[in-house]
Structure formats: C-alpha cells, structure tokens
Length: 265
Image (cartoon, rainbow, N blue to C red; front, side, top):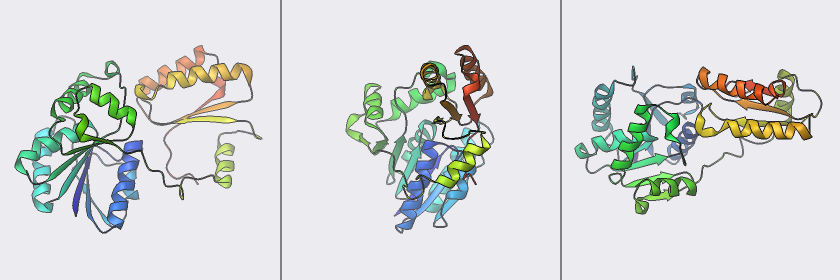
C-alpha cells in the first residue's frame, strides 16, 4: 500500500512524534510510506530509511496555492492509496484536493480536545472552523482520545467517521534510565534525591501550564524540598507570562525552565 502523511512540521511535539512512530512502523511492514512536511524539523532524522521524506519548503503561512500545486504534483507522482493528514491545516488541504483524486482514501489525524480558541489568532480559529465544516469529506477521522472524539462530535464532526486510537509509546526506548537520570539532575544542579516533578510539552495555552504552577505552589507549602521542571519550546511572550505567574506564586526559585530536548547524553 502507498501512503502519504502530510504534516506542518516535524518539530518536537506529541503529534509529530506519533506520526514518526506510525510512519516507521508502516514502513517496516512493507508499505511504501512518504512523509510530506511543510517546514521540516528535528524529528526528520528519526524517520527510518524505509520512509521517504518530501520537504515542501513552505516559505510562509500565506503560500497556500504554491503548496497545493506541490501536493498535486506529489499526489500524481506517487499515486497513493491513502493520504493521511495530521492536524487541522494539513487535514483541510487533503480534502481540498480530494475532488482531483476521488479514488484516494483520505484520513484525518485529530490530536486535541477541549481547545479554548480564544487563546489563538484569527487564522487558527478560521482553520478550525473550516475543518469543522469539511469534516464530512474524509473517509476516516482518527482521534487520539475519547475526550477528543466527544469534543469534536459536539463541534459538528460526524461521529460515525471518527475512531479513537490512543497514542502508542515505545517502551523499549522510553523507560527508566538511571545514568541518564543522574546526568540530567547534575546538569540542573539537583542534589541528592530531592523530588522533581516535570511537565513536558510545548509552551501553549492548551497545555494549561498555569494549573501546573498553581499545583506546584500548593505542594511547595507542604513539601519545600520538591522542585519542578517545565520543558518545552514556545513563544517568548507566553514563557514570560508563565515566569511572571511563578514569581507571583512565590515559586520562581523552585521551577526549572528547559527548552525541548533531543536525545540527552
């Protein structure tokens, strides 16, 4: 089977990680898999040799027509059996091209739930509304949680086309590693066995870092030896807002801030 995945970027992130795992797994099973990515990213290097990478080199968020032309060319060259979009904008693109390729099965990947769109710009809100209106056109919509399925059904997505499949975790790779634990704690100047509570995810309002920091403040009053870590990338304005909240809560000295990490050595 020939499969094309379409995603905005392969930066560090949960959806991006899951796409890499899925593409590699399907490639290992003998399927012809291509990952088309608009902006690239560090997770590109984790695609296996069995997976073809097509960089679309989208210059800006407004270069849509050129992107559609590239996708049309790719579609005609590869003649895929399945095109699988990941997240709202790529999903919308797949159904815009569907009339040109009616025999191709279109799958959407939906990876969120209970999103407060008031935190985002007008283009993000518009893209969500477009995806909601176009959700009847893909052949299948895969959601990564029951909460996400329920949320999107309430927003007008066709319930009969959605299926919830939880994220898969490679437990051979992501497992306790005592030497790595010691290295990281040492690099963060954490001594002894002081408890460390971490939150890993991009700096984005939907991740609700504010609740994490509020909980950290409550714990700190009862267990002052506990430290906290927020790990992830995001807009500096949002990072500054979170650091200001930590200061207001009186826990600035207890919170470590770290960018997204690759393999830590």
